Length: 118
Image 1 (cartoon, rainbow, N blue to C red):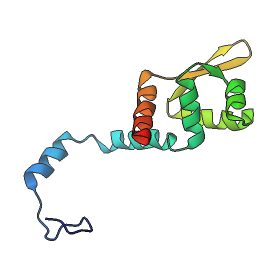
Image 2 (image 1 turned 180 degrees about the vertical axis):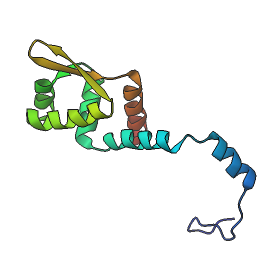
Image 3 (image 1 turned 30 degrees about the horizontal axis):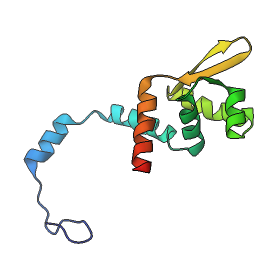
């Protein structure tokens, strides 16, 4: 039973539920990696970059123009996203063309957009 503030009125551990959850939960290492990934998603500029790259591959200059930012500021954010394996790039002559590392990134962004708009 709960009070209006969301706390239990009595302390009682539901051992079957707790044991089932312990068995189902991922390891601390995996959950840490997820937290780090979601941290990278926690910046509005990085979200804009991910959103833009969900439509098309873009070079640093394209992203800087699109976001009205300097190339060095965009490069800094891309470094964070690369570190979390959210984006990758390929060289095209003297340009670095960025793209989403895998389809999960677009799905994760899509879930966030649904939550925000729904």
